[in-house]
Length: 142
View 1 (tube, rainbow, N blue to C red):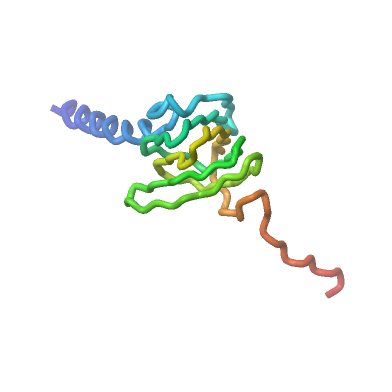
View 2: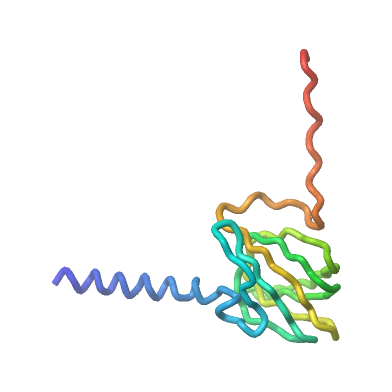
């Protein structure tokens, strides 16, 4: 009789884990996302959207995005809100972990690399490769 509650618990855990695993863009949208490289520190995805193509809802950990062309991308979030982000060719940008549905708003192809970071995500930093200003160093003897 003790086996039945354990089996039920295992089944519930499997059901709970399936949606989380199913939100990997390579698995849920292989038309647009392909794995280019992976090790224990990063996962690099090659991304291609044709003109006005839309993905499906998926999520990423903290990442660096490197667009190969200028693009306007609409990101729709699980709560229904959306925003348009302008991506500049060859301008690396850091993005916090998020769940979204991207859509290429351009009449041209959108090609980019996404470098997903593994491990604990750092605090948010300004985009565009810029870092926040540091406090001046203290002088010795004061």
